[in-house]
Amino acid sequence: MTDTGNGSVADSGSENGRREDNPTRIGNRRYASELFRLQLELVKMVEWIKHEGLKVVVIFEGRDAAGKGGVIKRITQHLSPRICRVVALPAPTERERTQWYFQRYVPHLPAAGEMVMFDRSWYNRAGVERVMEFCTDEEYRDFMRACPEFERMLVRSGIRLIKYWFSVSDEEQEKRFQARLHQSHKRWKLSPMDLESRRRWVAYSKAKDEMFAHTDIKQAPWYVVNADVKKHARLNCISHLLSMVDYADLTPESIELPKREDAGAYVRPPFSEQTLVPAVYP
Image (cartoon, rainbow, N blue to C red; front, side, top):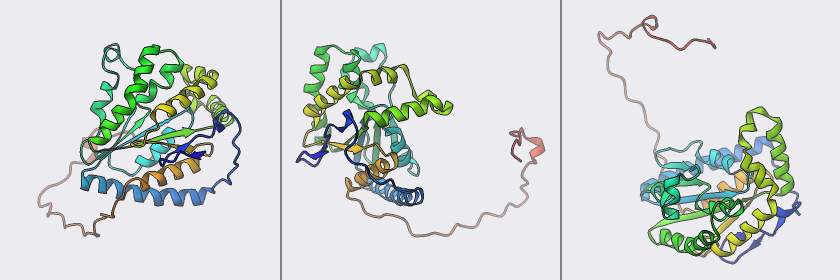
């Protein structure tokens, strides 16, 4: 990876083969400790976003099995869903296909005091739609022209736009696909589209390179996460996200619970008069 000069990190091309670096993997205990520490900071950051009325959009893009969902899960684990929400839109409907391309994403943008995370986003047009020929060449070219201006407009309106690309090598993706094939509880993650995208690895690489060339803009640069080691990717991404918002600790002082009112003559109805969930685990 190389510094682009605008704060983002460009992919050095290692997606097309073996990674040059071989980092020492973090131990489970240290990972759990660091993750929890960062999650506590996320709580502080989100409270600050609410307090200051900030509007934050975080985009997660990358290849299948790159770990986008895993990091989103860790980010949201202890956060209020009223402040932080995840948007993962399905394929567009027939009606949506006739709309302005960005139209179906706009209703999900944050109001003041909210952070919205897109698990895949409008960049579907530059990736899967381009490679799988779900859009015309004209629609693709129009997206590449319009996207930078659309994002600049969002930033001018007061939205903080943060874009992550999870970069995984072909060897590591293959391992994760094989793991999904052999673990029944993960097999649902492999769709026919995933298998076809695996076959079209080079086409996806070229599409990603072209996407970066047009949309890695000063107002909303791409930040590349080396995702070959899931735990490292999660910690690095969360740590970087925290650095993108200058927040203060608004943790309230400890409080004492007030005493309950006297129940008086009230008696709770017995379980025998209610329909209970069977006690399979008594």
